[in-house]
Length: 189
Image: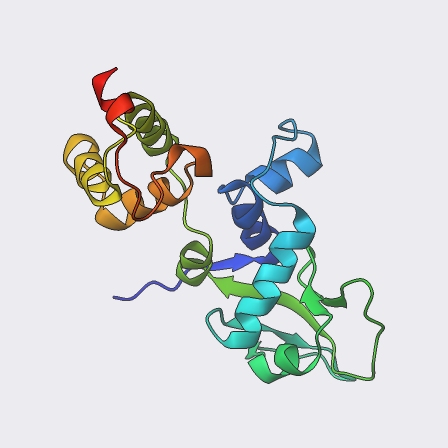
């Protein structure tokens, strides 16, 4: 049996901003304090809009007509691809992002997204991998990228993809530059 879980727009944007689908709605209701987010609402909306436009995320909703729709329909990615400022807001409606101006287009409400597509758009980061990678870079600055990634996989039990992502999140000064040799002065110390 295939289960297709759908997330409402506020859950999808919350996942993009916080890595947790419940954080945004709980903060807006006053149940939780606002936490520092990984990306702002505008950045998350633009990334979601771009993913819909390229077809990597499927959006379904009710088209606003004179008679109400009874079932959600798939929203064409061409609609988002053709109109640069068109986006989905937190309430699940199509809106325009600044500085775009409204045009005569079909309006959509009750927009939902596939949970797996949203999670692949914004993969969850693991703080323990980031801490491990920073500690490894600080203690062994001359290790090559491949060796550090392999060590991360073997010591933390993460996947290869997660280790690469953790290495890519390292600050630039902690990464060994491509093609740079180890200086003798740093090896002797």
